[in-house]
Image 1 (tube, rainbow, N blue to C red):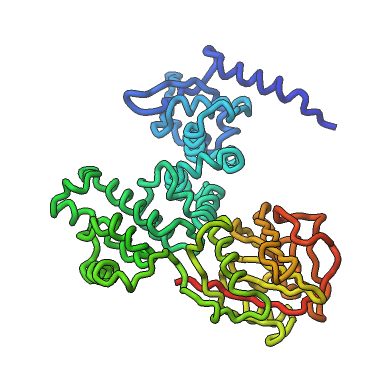
Image 2 (cartoon, rainbow, N blue to C red; image 1 turned 180 degrees about the vertical axis):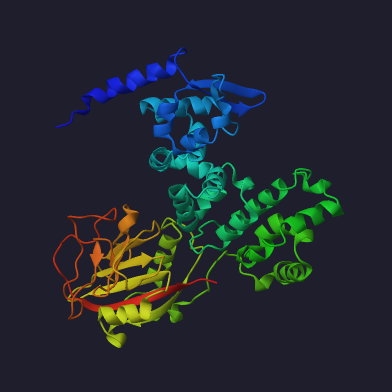
Length: 472
């Protein structure tokens, strides 16, 4: 049986060899003028620990002349202080990442890639994702540019892709937002999960556009015709994506109208006509959805008041807040009309995003439900999202007696399977043949923050409806 208790001593001995200034056979010149440093090393150790250095050493045979001159190699793209950290890792297998700034860890990662230290590349990426998530969100552009410049950084690439997909508003709030590329900015604005208000999007777009032209002043009153044209040209691909019609007249007048010269003429004339010349045509309340009226709620379970409350939940408002977005609830499935089978559920609802499930529990006045911002599908497995929630009303007639529960383990937010109806983690499962007669809400394994039922007992579904939340 092997015992690894000797490894720390071996590691320490090798580090002492590294510090030995007498016995070495390689010199390594690291960095470039004026920051160059010479390191002493040992060929046998570098050959075994780095395939890249082994290849460099094998192609530098001309450097070791017959007169016994020392083998000498150059690594101009690596900073001396970073190479010193990596050299200690190569010799002693030690790298205490907690001691270094996150920006230095990024530099170590880039240098590790150049030296083809695969084990270290994987370790550094996992360390960053597990312990430096907030920092990477705040410095998104640095991480994005770094990860996609190198195919070795697949884990960081996945981190960036997932953040853009699920929490794009965090990128707008990052400290290096103004450095992101135009294509990245366009992708963020167009993403379905984007939650930032439209006036905030406009303000951030202006901030980004001005930052791309350092000669532009922050003082709009000083702008010349050329200045407006410069900003217009910078934002010409982005302005058509702004949802100006979701703004209030006051927001348009205060924040958009002063920049009217950068908006394409046809769009500008239409906005001015609708917001200023004919302001009565523009509702004062901001909305990103189609307006609805009580008569348009096609439901046998919930009322217009439920729709108002659920709309607030979707927008993460307090119950006392004024409704900003009164969404259109488009009925796409009703159990008594379409059937209660999981097959029919997937046939009708698969690949449709932004759905609300409403369930009337049999032999009671209880209503259960859940919101899925992503799509349902027939592939078996859990789906990750931070935007889902589930809820319950003990009595349809008492709208104030409810439980709202947001997802806490987003990796298990929703569950897809051909044999299951709409299912939210372990906390709300529709299953069974006769009116989903084996449905349940688990209290033992929890995916959502709060219990929406006080019992684990199976229940049957008397009626259920699935609505798609319609956005413009």
